[in-house]
Length: 219
Image 1 (cartoon, helix red, strand yellow):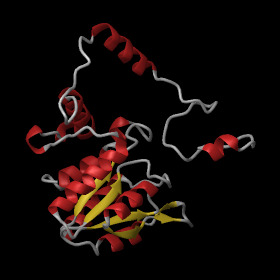
Image 2 (image 1 turned 60 degrees about the vertical axis):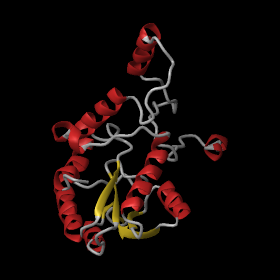
Image 3 (image 1 turned 90 degrees about the vertical axis):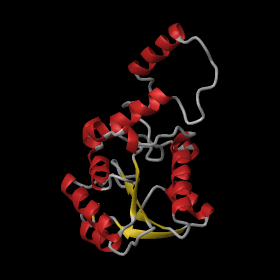
Image 4 (image 1 turned 90 degrees about the horizontal axis):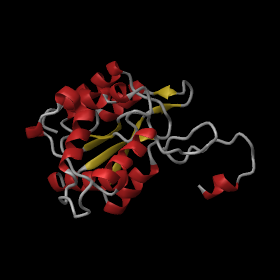
């Protein structure tokens, strides 16, 4: 971020942080956020702690936004964390509790913090082919071949939408094929859905996650 700010060139584009920016490079406060803040200012009655897992109504609303009609309270567990990176760490820790010898398959390339967390935890990581430099799209056949090498107890880390850092995404049909490949191996899918709504829309960006949830009802 510091290098970007210090770069004097005109027309530069910051690809380092996944936040919304307007044409001038400024990150504005959304009107909906300002309205919500004003409403809270007028109506909130306490600053006391909420439950450790996070505000229940907020967690339920988030789950419904992601899962839509697939949301089932009896099969859904939610937890508020300190940022998305904190959520990933908690998710990896939970997965390791269930499978201490797990390996994590990750897309090549992936968000660098994925690997930083897993390296610190001492978890074995295995790349799977994802981005094809020639077509500037997904190397789908390579991806399927590599994921077929996973086994029960492993975790397959997927980007729900707006793949970081390539921007190359799976189609709905490809998501269904990937779900079938993972199911055949017995591995467990884990989805990093950091940018829902920043790609094609709230509903469209959740399609891949919903396909996985429908294919793995107990994950």
